[in-house]
Length: 128
Image (cartoon, rainbow, N blue to C red; front, side, top):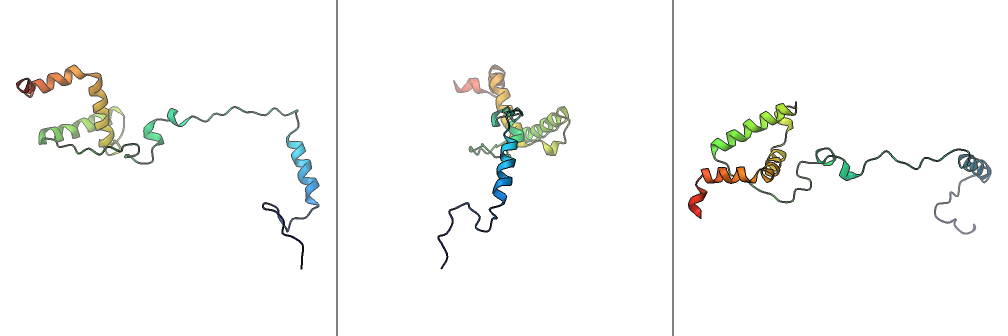
């Protein structure tokens, strides 16, 4: 019967004569004459725009909301989507409705008084 098995990671079929060549290559690669570049050009995940780093439109969107729109606003949403796609120099089918709706919420957060004006036009002053 043979000897004990070699430890994990060792190659029982390896030729011991290659050890010297491997050691020489290792020593050549780590000579102090060659500067080692430790900087990286990679970006952190948060620096990559969301629309690029995501795998699907629903990624990071755990809140599922259904938008019930009156016909006139469903038509207006389609018109806004087309206009935004034109502004982005893209095809409208390449602009996500989910992204558009989320952008509209963001835009609304920047123009709250104008949103309130619209709601007042719809009769919200009668609900006070």
